[in-house]
Length: 418
Ligand SMILES: [Zn+2]
Image 1 (cartoon, rainbow, N blue to C red):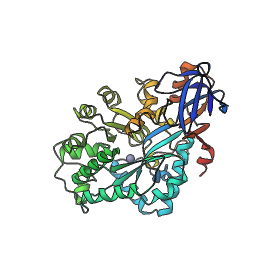
Image 2: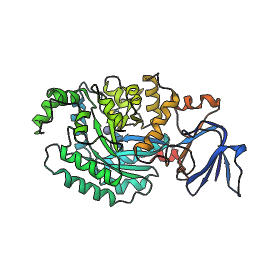
Image 3: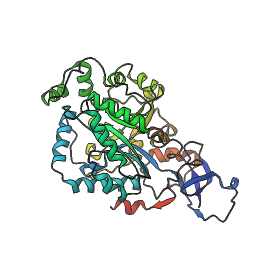
Image 4: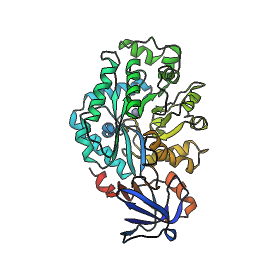
């Protein structure tokens, strides 16, 4: 199949006017200007017209199973209030609530041009039931929590590995997600890291998300410290180091790590993350909902951190003009661009495409239009000039008009209605 579009944005190469993309066996065989590509055979040619053709986006952090909580929890005064609210909310849900929520979130991502998502799976029973309901590439990260050390970390990780490998997931991939330093014991974190390295899986951890988490580890006091001590957590790791420094001591900083949030970094933390080729996933709308301190995007990028964007869950979003928000990396890019005017659109779009691919250990496969990459594509109606195309993608309110995964069109409108 040969696709022709007025503008093609390969991401890993400059924009192309009057571009064509040749697709064979679900992969991209060739990309270039229409006048430069010679057709060898009777390819089916589809002229997409006045559109930007770009790769499907890569969402580096999501909790699909909380999608139906959109706009239900008002922005809290303290992060701890939100944790208590979501625990109560989850306790009031049954399995079908989580399943419905998961599938509707997947539909929203597809409608908004995401073709691969790193999804934190808090309810692993959903994986075999829900994954077949979406054409999305799901990278299923098993969430691991052992707050009171009741379960040995190594056993939990063995079970998670068995569960993940027991499910066929040919389009997507696997990962482990010890929830956070304050909810996963050191032995669990280390066992998860060893398992991720040996399977070449990514490892996702919420790191330094809130001011009270940073305060607990650094100073050994504060609201989170008191709350967790009351909940029988072993607090002997508190009062000395930042969360990033603790991760380094545990040997967890590597190019397998997706350190999610990193809103409260101490001096030296960014350099440690950069030196170890870590990924940091920033979730701009969740960040705004909690009113966190300014995200240190430029500092992290400058030291070589692989910066990605994620939607996080809709449980940390507020209603917008009375409407529930949707999972959309376009919205995340727009909010990021508004908050970081020193980043150009050409720096921001890779954070939602090729940087995510690198984080998920799928570089050269997804997030770009290049030879041998998977044919995960989307179109956006656009009639402006070539040089403003990337700016349009990053700054405008966008819905994809067509989405393709592995060479097959998937209808984003019917997906959204699920
Ligand atoms: Zn999260």
